[in-house]
Length: 116
Image (cartoon, rainbow, N blue to C red; front, side, top):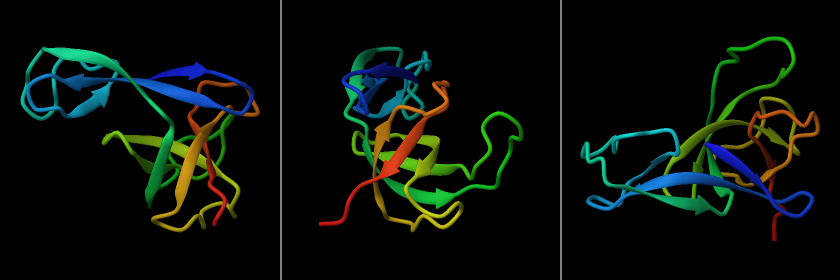
């Protein structure tokens, strides 16, 4: 994934979409993970998504926290941390949006969307 910074507090992700089956995949993929086609076009995700599940922590050190799987509205999944809730207690199904990381690192960080 390529993180594209916009105005302060806003960000977008680059990804690829298959011209044959229209599946979304990471910008680093060379082949479609669904149909195997190499006919992928670049696209940009708006950074809005839904929390799918909490993962076990796999890293220690510079970026502590609980990783989540986030399903973006464009149809692909990323692993990221979520701000705005208690660590490890962000509800499944919660809406989130991509933000810049306070550490300025390359780790994807989302924030809980305000409830209406």
